[in-house]
Image (cartoon, rainbow, N blue to C red; front, side, top):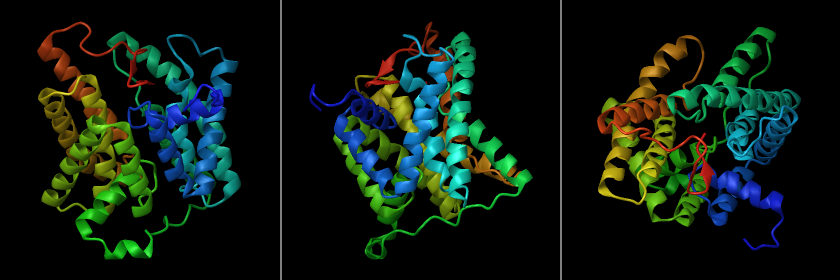
Length: 313
């Protein structure tokens, strides 16, 4: 990325790279390309980011302590998942706009509350908005989207463990296809060795737990996506890389993988999916335990600081 690169493009690439706790433009470009394999979902992701930023600016929520990326993180995932939830494109677009605007308000509220306890909001706004959207959709009787498309036919020639790993990587951008996973893996490699190792550590922990508990395939993919985020968030706290950072990341990813099936059963009775709730809860637990053990104040970064170029919500 050069100085002549448009500011809007730099912002978008940094936003996408921030999903894996990176600031590398190549990482953002590859993640953007991964989402572009589903053009409508990619479009709604950008629309959601715009809606969230317009809302935040209109309400004067953006400041030095709460920069724009704070409000666009959950909004991006709202947009990416909208097209995979509602069959009607108009309803999906409406959810992308209104859901992202609501996520801005929730982000501001949760950050204000979390700063009292030095806890980040993470993706909780996205989870809350999506749960509300599912409930509202059932009340008004909307049509739900068809199951997501399968991986390319060539994926059938891959060994099953490798295919599962790539599909799990794709799931972190709401598209569990092998071809998407390959682009996500490329994005992780572009982000650097530390980011790649943390992501693979989380992925490995989740797949081990999934095999030991004999979880269904869909639940294994969901657990893997959450564990990858958990490992990245936990490992990013302990910079520079060390055995301690990888140990904490592995612990957080394993706990997150166990939380996923534990939450899936009760939420399933409400016809809800855990989404990224296991990541949020496991990270909060790990953070509070670490703070208690080290007795540092604060044990975590200030909520407005930047890790690897991205504000941690």
